[in-house]
Every structure is written in structure tokens, then in C-alpha cells.
Length: 215
Image 1 (cartoon, one colour):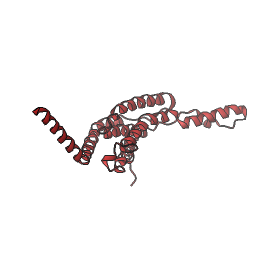
Image 2 (cartoon, rainbow, N blue to C red; image 1 turned 180 degrees about the horizontal axis):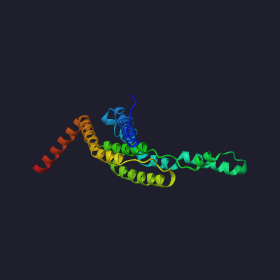
Image 3 (spheres, rainbow, N blue to C red; image 1 turned 180 degrees about the vertical axis):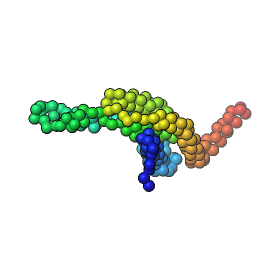
Image 4 (cartoon, rainbow, N blue to C red; image 1 turned 90 degrees about the vertical axis):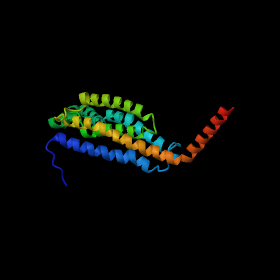
């Protein structure tokens, strides 16, 4: 069924939230489903390793690829070629204006990428302590890259109301639910998987300190 949105802002909010949910499920949650054995989560090339690589890609590679702006590079090459033709260039004034115009900003995609980064870092923080510092690094890079692109490279965006900003700022506390669910899932799975090892280690410690106290 086709959606009917009253404003461009509401359309972008709708697209952003759907992209966020889809990307989080398809990239972050899928790693847990494909690594069902908790005893293999911390071995090389398994869940902890894959999740760390995913977070690094989201935090560092994604904003820098956005900064590279392949569309603008392609336009720059075309401009250079047309300038080289001089008076032989057959570009119309409208085509020339389009070439020199900055690329459009995709607000829904940008917000979705950032929200997925935050949700993924919070989701994996119970088993990857480095996830929270990486979220801070990713937030730093995303802020400055998006600000630079908005002010220097993109063309003037469409007018948006404050609905998008307020919606996702209000959405941030709900992200804590993701952390709560992840904490319960990871701790419960690890406790059950290593129950025998934990019990044996605890009994050994109790036996050791009991003997030390008697002496």
C-alpha cells in the first residue's frame, strides 16, 4: 500500500526509521543468529571479531566514503573535460548549471546510518567493551563529515521542520531497550554455556581459601 505523507519531513522520518530497523536487523542482529554457540563467540573470526569489524566500518569507513563523494568526483571530471574542449563544448547552460550544482543531501539515509551505528555499539557493548569508545569516535567523525558536506559540498537542502530532529532525539532513550535485551541475551547465553566451568572454578576457589584459612 502506498503511503501518503503530509510533508517532506514526515516522509523522511518514515524512510529513516524503516532504514534504521532494516539495517540493524540485517547487519547487527544477523551476526548473532549466524553464531549460535556462545563458546565460539570470542574465538578468532567469530562473533566478537565480526561485530568489531562491523562497528569499525560503521564508525570510520562509512563517513569517510561519504566524504569521498563519488558523485561529485564524477562531476568534477566531467567539468574538467568540458573545460578542455573550450569553445567546442556543446553543453547547454542548464547542463552546465547542473554540473556545478552540489549533490543532494539524503537526510533519511544519513540519520539512519548514524542511528544504526549507535544501536550496534550499544547492542554489542556487553561482550565488546571497546564498542562504546568506538561509538564516540564514530559520532565525532559523523558530525564533522556531515557538517562539512552540508556546508561545503551539498546543494541547499529542502526545508525541513524540527520534527525529524525531535523524533530521533526522543527515540534515543528507547535505544536503551536494545542494550537491556542484549545484556540479558548475552549474559544468559554465556552463563548457561560456561555453567560447568564457572562451577568448577568457584569450587576450586572455595576449596583453596578454605585450606588457607585452616592453616
